[in-house]
Structure formats: structure tokens, C-alpha cells
Length: 283
Image (cartoon, rainbow, N blue to C red; front, side, top):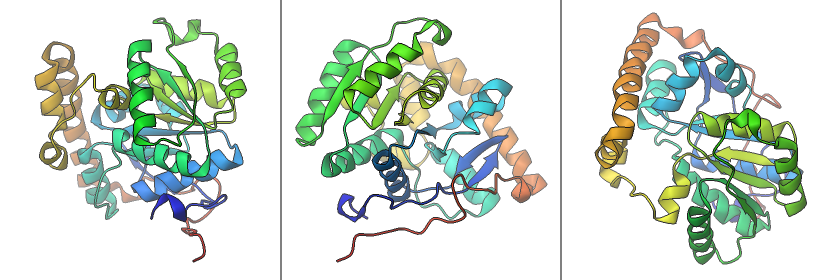
């Protein structure tokens, strides 16, 4: 599917989910995710799409309040290869690839540029946002970046969410990329969905990668589920505890779920309907 194949109303239902470690994850693809995001944006339907790798999934599984929120998201895509492997192994999802946040960011930007939907960048620092904006518009000249915002470094409950939502609304954007790191970005996207009719995508390190301020793992490491090792080598002091704890917990808990045969442990009712027929523009 290309951006030309997407039309308004092309995704009548968010695809169904499967439960991993208590978190409802969508067994989806890039094409499906982009189609759903664009359809919701064109309808001005408030929504949250998050990209969960192992760290985000394990964090949500161990926090009941966070888990209650993310399980109401419209889509949680398998950002990490191990998450994809778990969906395939436990549920037979048949996914051939993950849905990587930085890659989905580019594909959504391409579709937004092609269909005249404006975007808003929320997160990181102003220097990063400036570089990110330049790089995105250089790659997609027709992309309308309606606004950028670097939120203050403070607890989320101290932010003026009504004022933030008002700025986004007045910008005219229909898609908001949120780059604050998990789980903060998930909670921020949740707050925005309550206040503004935008599709809010929690995309993790995509801002830094596309701004060129951090290096992305080589493709061969990404394919083999070794991106964590690359990022650990880049930022050992910050990330060693995260990966030691969450990777171990994910392996143990997903193997336990597989051994118990928890195929029935699903969020079987898709949000917004019963099926997902792809809708392509007539030739």
C-alpha cells in the first residue's frame, strides 16, 4: 500500500488486540497502522497510537494505573522484535515485521504530506525540534508542520494540559507526534486525547533519530532484536538497569504465558467495529 491508496474513511475499525503480560497489543503492520492513523485524522477522531518495545510493555504490565490507560489506547503496535515474536509464538499472529516508531513516523509524515493533514511535534528540546522539523520538511516538502512544542521538564500533573490542547487545536494539526520516552509519552498522549480531536502518536526516540542527535542501530541488529544492545552501548550508564531488568522480566513472563497456552487471554473486541477491510482508492 502507498499513500495514494489511503482515502478518508479507509479504516472503519481499529484492528483487534492480543494480551501480552496484561497489556493489549495490536497485531498490526505498517500499512494498516498508517491507514488507521490517516482515517482517524481525516475524521478528526481523537485517538492514541503507541509503539511498545519490551521496556514500555513491561513497565505498563507492572503499573496498574498506567496499564488501565494504555489498554484503552486505540492501537499499541509491536515496536520491538521480541514483542512481535511473542505475538507470533503465543497467538500465531503471522507478523513478518515489527512496527518501529521511527519508521512509522516517516510513513505517517509521508501520508500526511500527500493528503494535506498538518502535524504537531510535542516533546524533546527546542534545538532537537528545530533540526527534526528541518529534516522532515526536507524529506517531505509538502509536509505541513503546524506547530512544535518543547514541554517543561516537570511532572505531567503540573502541566497545563488545557492550554497545551488549545495551542494544538488552534494550530489546525490533526496528528500529534509525542516524543517524551516511555511511559511519560503514553500518559501525555492520554491527556491529549481527552482534550483535542487529534491522533496522538507516542513514538519514543524517533525525534532524536530523525533529528540526527542519536544514532540508530544498524538494520541487521534491528532485524535480530538486538537494538537494545546497540542502544546500551551508546548510553550504558542510563540504560543498563532498564535492559537488565525489563528484558529479563519480558522473557520470563512471555515464556510463562506461552507455556500456559494463553491464546484465550485477548482483548477480543476491536475498538470501533468488528473487522478491518483495507479500502483502496479505485483505479
